[in-house]
Length: 120
Image (cartoon, rainbow, N blue to C red; front, side):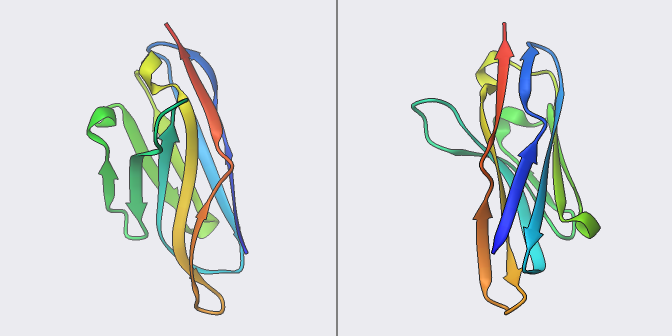
């Protein structure tokens, strides 16, 4: 009922930057929080950053100062500007959104993921 589509991943050299985007669509009444998580091969999915509808942000310590999350509420879109990339940032980056459907039931949806690969 809610679809999330990520874009913007790719191959980049260490120290480089990318901008990830995620658009939510479907029977959405409201989105409370949107966020980015990442999962490297053989590891668990970890929080990268989240942002509320009011703009309050939260970052994992390992990305603070290098990554910036933002959102456009009118477009149901969340962005992640990733800078000063390190090889250890390589992972599949997943978008997440939590909110309410038009029938007022809650939703917690995930995108398919976008690959970020950082070469040394």
